[in-house]
Length: 239
Ligand SMILES: C[S@@+](CC[C@H](N)C(=O)[O-])C[C@H]1O[C@@H](n2cnc3c(N)ncnc32)[C@H](O)[C@@H]1O
Image 1 (tube, helix red, strand yellow):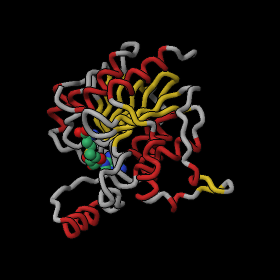
Image 2: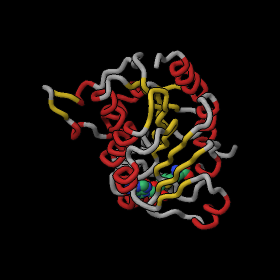
Image 3: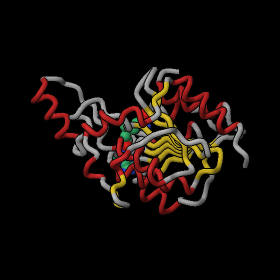
């Protein structure tokens, strides 16, 4: 397997009851999607960067929806029970959190949601505006990197604050960081503190310095420990 996302997703799917159903939001060239092994796969992206007709012919069991995630969930939001959802669409906290909440409606007690881009690589990568972030990095540091994670990192403290029946961990080895989220009564010990102040949501305070100070609250793990934790937790879930 050539990419870290497909490797992690396939390891999780391998441990699930068959036949498995997989949804990917934000698919681009299909680098991950085409490498995922699941009985039924659904791809959502407003602009696929591959020959759609050819892909449909090659694998008639897969579905391709060339629409935004909002449109997809609006039309198909309650029709399928996916075992694994990979969220890798628009990298802003509000879009990703909306995708996440919608994913909860089409998943079940033993499903896993994989979140990309929750760990910005520098202050420029967490600019909500991709072009501005990349240009500022080039201007300030001379780096030609086009790394962009947006402010998706804010979704993890939101999950911690608003979803007390969900557990999560963040893989930080063997490829780009990604979070795994699943239903569990054993929650990670974390204290994001200032997310909720006097009962109000204080999103404005979640800047890049906040992220640096709070990294350990993302429940950081190496890849094999993270996947083993999820599989063990789901294996012992009473449903
Ligand atoms: C980083 S790429 C996805 C990469 C892919 N998941 C992979 O692993 O190969 C992000 C994709 O999100 C798509 N995207 C942007 N806005 C979106 C939206 N509102 N809904 C769904 N996808 C979106 C973009 O078109 C782009 O193809």
